[in-house]
Image (cartoon, one colour):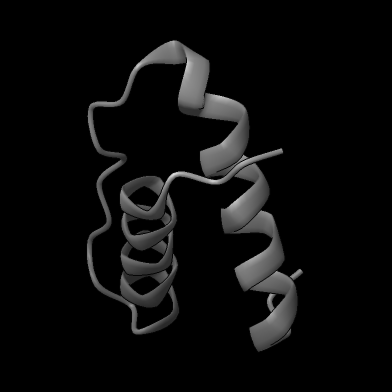
Length: 51
């Protein structure tokens, strides 16, 4: 799967906000990018030990 850099950046910002205890909003993204966003979020959460 080719990852869109913008979606990866949004997912990392989402995870960083959640880890820091801040409010995190899911950005408005096209449905075709949803799997990529959630895959990146899960991966980033695993890296910080939150999953």
